[in-house]
Image (cartoon, rainbow, N blue to C red):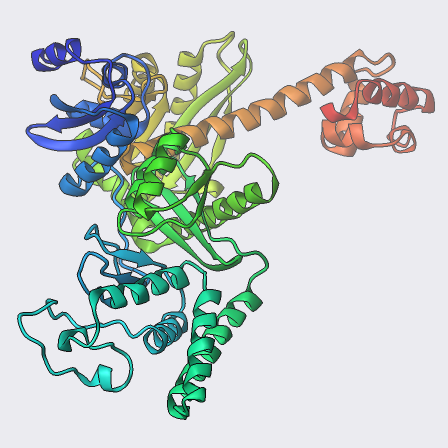
Length: 607
């Protein structure tokens, strides 16, 4: 830490607010905290961080704070700051699809009824969103025929009355521009529209029925017919909605899937008890962050220009009470935030999570993402290690043993960032006694390099070799290479802090913990470890079985060779029945029975 950071950290208050992490004057990240002192100080401790946080901390040289009175105020402030600065390390929600809302400009003397694609903080009332192209057309048609509010942009009231437009002649406007309706009379209609959009349609129908009867009594049959059609449209619209509904609930269901690098958020839109749509949103660099923090950032950005449903069902959030209060403020009405642990709502979250995983897998399979994580990562690795050419073939090595017994080294092969499993190899360690991973690695690499020098079917030399471990493992690997006069680049990766060690460099190299480059070499290292452990466990199991075979009375060296020749493996011997064992040349029924009992008395699971 520099002096600026130390001084500011010492003066941090124990109060809620927002912090702005900076690097060379640029705002890198905006966060909120219940306790600024604890939260900001935690970034600069020696405790392990997630990939994104470590990459952020490596760039931070300054920070600012803004105090807030409450946690809710801090959440609102954070949302506004992210929208203003768009920091690199905050979630960036890229979304170009906006569903329509009904907008009523209640902040004007004669409110207008229009269709809007975004929810703005402009004092108007918004209802929706409405899904499906037919839904908004049908609804606006009913509204304009039943509630003749104006749709024009004229500033009212004006200095003088104007001639009413065609909408007035068609019965779709009351003509406030011409002074044909007072503000009080107009407001009654506005209140009815708002009540109708909230679901209270029966009073509207009753009013229209009364007006229809009055028009018929006055022999205004054309007017009565218009009112009758309006009633029919409203009832038809409501009956259609009811037919689609199993329960009249509006819900947004939100979950996030992660893969270590990136994340995918999924939102299920349920309106009137019917799932109308499912949408996914890619969240780059959020694959290793706590899911609560990812959802905090996603929810506040997702509802920045949308109205939440009356119930938001989420996988997790950090502060449910504060988030629920924030959602209520966005909707300007009641919202319930639910974090289910069981039951039907938990099944909805599980469904959203499964959809998110599927969407993430499909995104990762796209050519651009595959390129970034494989060949693109190899190109960046060449730059990081100072190689003159991009390493196409990378081999990873690891050593596995149990207290020095059954030592085995594994070699995995990646070409252009993708595993080539047919080229994986094992090396059973032959010359090393005891738990000496350094010498075992040296033996395995020496044998591997010699295979490259054979005149008959040589193995191709790799462009780069990765060994699991720190500077000592790297030193023994270099000894093997140098002993044969080769110049293949070799480096190592230490697991504790994911430090990269290079020849002739004292200090380790720390790659961006959220970069595809580090993720690539982690995959190679982990694959070598998995492949080696699998082989080691198999050898250990075979050794255990062979030991039991040698302990059976009456089974000497000659019978052991005959049994292995007949069944080809220890597993085959363990799976044979008494009759098959007795049929082996040199075996007797008594010896076969003793062998079968000895092997199966200790459990067939060891075979």
